[in-house]
Length: 111
Length: 113
Image (cartoon, rainbow over all chains, first blue to last red; front, side):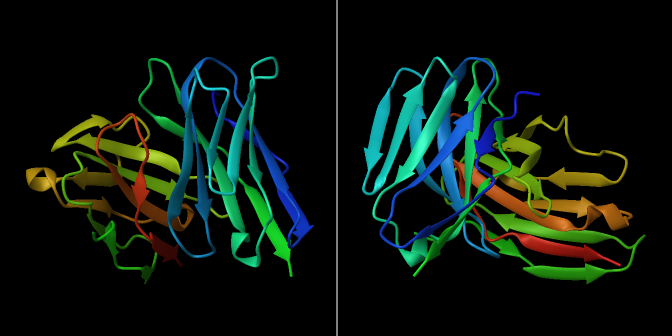
């Protein structure tokens, strides 16, 4: 399976702390995307990073690349209660236009 | 700009009954996707359309599932007959093309009893 895998499966932190989630993949990717899903809602696109980018920022979000581990991390800085949601990484592999989603990280921000 | 619209939001049916879901994508988006999301899992692609052509339906259980996208805009996904294992959230998404970010609708939560 080419499915990306998120780590950890669940994460609880205090409001104001930083949250880090990792997404691993198995083969060469075209791009990697992160989505957020609030309970009972659809997914919302957060950020996209291309294979030739090592880091990307968007507001309080930062995505970094570790090519040795075939892993990309999503960092949410200065977390807020509203950040409580499930976060999914989605991977597009070269030669395949299908977007493959992982199983998600359930993030809980404690006020 | 209106987002992806789906209806109904919730549906409860008995097994062996038919059910249909409807999706209206974002205006101008050529690519439309139907996903199924089981509890605690990520979405899994069922079918992808480029305009009115189904270009990837390899994960669609064709014995009971069917889909169409008339005139390359709205789309319907049908299950006939429904089975207990079909209980899930069915998500519709659209994008300008297949490479970049996708925009999701709120989903239809299907319960088969």
